[in-house]
Length: 152
Image 1 (cartoon, rainbow, N blue to C red):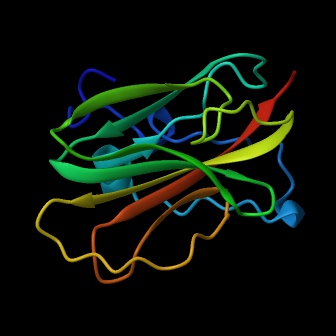
Image 2: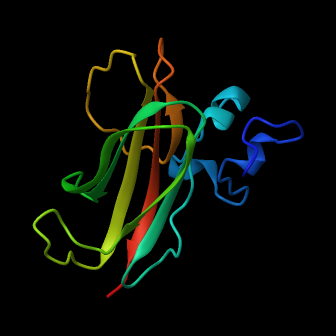
Image 3: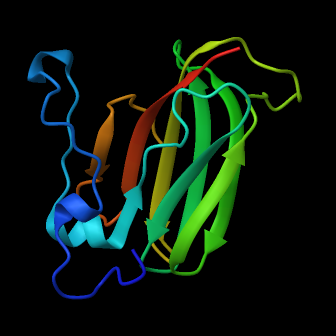
């Protein structure tokens, strides 16, 4: 992980992949090898979690990053990150609280990251809760969503 552009790395080094997950559940991961080295959202750890979980991502370019937590109905729970960032490996911790600092109920939540290189135009759209990663057509923007389970 310390050498995101170095030789010998493979897509599997940067992308969560579960070969035992049946395709019928609708989980998709659309990641090109070039994209995988540029931007990656890793699965939160621990998962499931009871108090605090860590969310980690990799950006190999200067970018604007937003990282938001949604509930199963698609409502925004909290926005943890909304800032320009230099290339690097980043980690943020979520303590299971909403923007109003109230503890949220136990259940399934989604961590959604949107990363776009600085200087590129961005047109916000609806958030799609496809679990996996994708690149917006015509840009090098990256989005990824991971499922998290909060226990109380």
